[in-house]
Image (cartoon, rainbow, N blue to C red; front, top):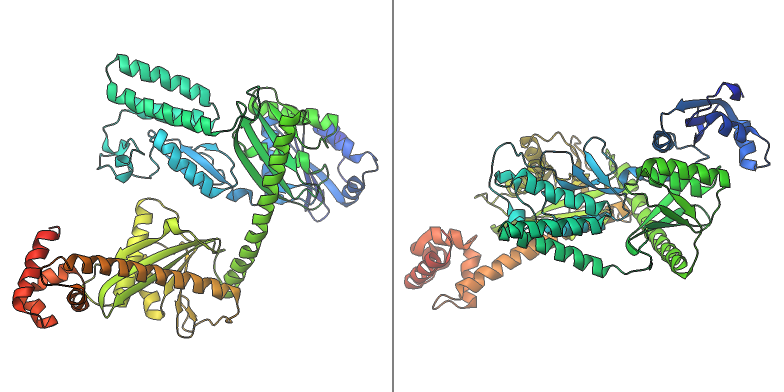
Amino acid sequence: MRTDPASLPDRCGVYLFRSGEGNVLYVGKAINIRARVRSHLQDTGNEKEVRLRREADTIEWIATATELEALVLEDTLIKRYRPRYNVRLKDDKSYPYILITSEEFPAVLHIRGIQRGRGEHFGPHSDPRAVRRSIRWLRKIFPIRSCRRELSRPSRPCLEHHLGRCLAPCTGTVSKDEYSQAVEGLRLFLSERTEEVLSRLERDMWKASSNEEYERAARIRDIVEGLRRSRQSQKVVLKGNEDLDVVHINGEGTAAAVVKVRDGRVIDVVSFTLEGGEPLRGPTEDFLSSFYAISGSIPPTIVLDRMDLSPQRKEELQRFLHDKRRGSVKIVRPRGDERRSLIDMARTNMELHMTQMQRSQRTEDVLSILRSGLGLSRLPVIIEGFDVSHLGGTGTVASMVQFREGRPNKSAYRRFKVRTDRNDDYLSMKEAVFRRYRRIVDHDGEMPDLVLIDGGKGQLKAALDAIRELGIERPFDIASLAKKEEELFLPGSSSSVHLKRSDPSLMLLQRVRDEAHRFAVSYQRTLRESDISILTRVDGVGKARALKLMNCFDSLGSMLEAGPRGISERCSLNIRLCERVIEFLRDELPR
């Protein structure tokens, strides 16, 4: 080895073993870099240490001012270089976090990965759907905005304000102090300081009441009741109201789970997949370093299922975590039935997570095949499919469905009443795509990875025209799938792509296309049945005549515009009956 260990500094920092080709083999942190590297170079009989010494050519080091800096830097370098002898969290950039933005009127958002400089992060979590549900629930208690509206000038409040989920700082009517109180309450709650939140809110409630601000006092009372109900739903598992994390890592070092207990109650269980070649120091130290480097919360006690840390490594890790927590941290074995039952909970959740990950891996394989088959710019994790439906040129509607990781995400489905006057499939598709992505652009929403249009070249061109009009520089891939021959059309290509009928990626696209068609048809049927039901309330119009009227006209509005004579001529109905229909519609339809 070309690096002399005596030349290394005897201070805190990070060190890297590199091969002769320049590849990073191992990244470690140490309170004393020189002493730690010398321990690697001693002949301890550890087979992996022997191989590391044989393969390593040079040792690099980076000194840090604090132990916390070393902990975070080690995690960053492991993610960057993916060394053979380190274990790391898989897909760490995609883990969901709750973000409170650093703005005058902060927003609470669901994001993936740490976005430094944007605000405070709370996580990581392992289930993005649970994070979204949590944000919806939390905003009922702490009504903070989740939009990206421009607040420089007052505007009308949106539906979220009317539903009690936002104080609407966009209106300019809420004071900064009142809004800041809601933000601070949410911040404390997410920092797992629920009792402090409750005490603070109760003081504010009595103060508002004594100042005769009864409406504000009532709002705070509702928040307190909501928090107390959530506390009651959490099962007490430790009698001593302890704060601790219980960590279980499987024997193969491929998965881990953490049970978070605060005030004696389980508040969360997160599971992770681990990856890496041959961990030099075992998966436990690597996992704890990686997890707590990105975690927003470190408790005073960490309970390990298996204590496979040497006393020296354990002491060092406790010091690193102490620096981040700014308080003492103890790593201990489970003692007592209560803590052992928490280990069982962690093990069960980890096994369920592994089963789910195996299914996800199969889906990811299909998405990878689709990406390579169509030459997509990225993995199509989010696919949105569009379809247009009408009955003989009347009652035109459009639908948009969303698939995440190969499965329908029904909460994101959207449907559109097409407003264009002309019976034109291309214009209808253009309108639906334009309306969908204009809303995303206006609200800084999440763009899909792939947009699938039901149709051929014409429908694809219409969708591309809508995207160009919005000024979107193709942040996603787009394709169309024609039903007859199951041909795929891509932008800029004159010929179509044919995938085998047995290709699982084609089957996924067919599922998206068919689901969009089903959703459009069901919407059209719902609208039609509603209109027929309205017409049957006209004296002399039964279901058969109502159906005849709907077959002649696009909607009740177009029927009203045609007038009695127009209805009579198009439907061959008695003029007096048509006059009754028009009179009824004038009274019933909104103006």
